[in-house]
Length: 485
Image 1 (tube, rainbow, N blue to C red):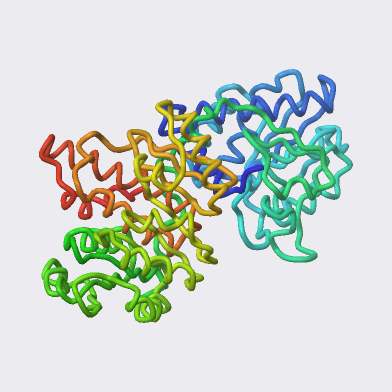
Image 2: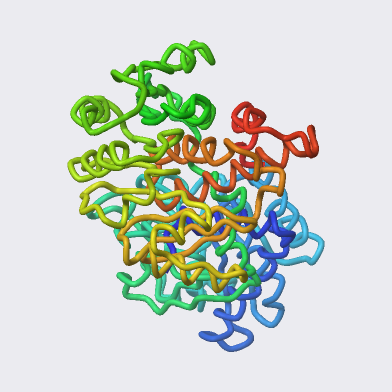
């Protein structure tokens, strides 16, 4: 089972891998035609009720494969308002192939009857696909009622129109109008809501490669755009806790958090470096901690600061030592929020009992230091990381030539990035980026998207600077890297 938003990401990732959406639509339409053949003999009458998106496009393709049936295509709306190029091309193809078709601009004019006046033998509902919210509007509402009033066998494409594919409930709430389908044909994988329907479900393989689901891609960026009505703070507030031995690390993390979309980035660091951190950018809010190292005496103060933020990034430039380790242990033991743990703070995680949601970002050496295992081959390493993530109960993002993101339930791989990113500081940029994303997405997705966009920013920096890439090249490239294109 795969949620609708994840399926949209997989579909976009497939296109990025070189599988054209047009090819996928052709395969989907063929699958719909096979479903019609499974319920009706050649010569049967088939009415295909099509919306103006790609869901309707699937049925337009299906009509071309049903040459042995008496087919009629009903388009809900004007052809010039078809929303995608590939659906529009398939509408035009029906005209060239002389397939009977009609446009329905007034839902009261929809007539599903066969030429002899009888109900069709099969109706294909291709009005609306998954991801639709709210109750059915016209003309789909009247069309759904007409479909339900028919005695035909009803086949829905992807999901019955008016049904939430993730829950199986009507999109218009209890009692909302929806198509009552006898069968559903969906693609690549089923969605959770289909199991709740009283309908036979066929999952058709349409040629989406496994890599579109296993590897990160531009589809993973879908849905991360800012709400146009949002206010300051709605897009995340991030607290970076680090510094002491190092000044640049917490600064890079905080700047990356801002460039990755956080509204505010605060840095809690020793007062000995606070002025230096502040001097990097007026966009940072610096909260000095007494002394020149972060220690257990700061646990209460940092906990108070953390309560004012959505996510904590813990570890950049923190250094090692008994006092630092004790601080990390005390903070994580009491903390119940969401945190990205990096660098020297990582080795404390396996020994801490915490209610926090952690995203740990080790490189392979740090992973071994935490008690995990690694392997040269990505798939073998991925399984080892997944097992260790399950033991820890936290998300792991293990950096490498191929990054591995895992929790107890799943694994994603990321192959953006380049050897130039072995320079110091790129891990701090990654930690801050993941921190910003974790304020608006679940931890696993934040880690996967963070790995993808930081690698993408690194690739752009390498194109510009070659072997001269440095970590400060990355933050300003993050906004472009987060564009879904």
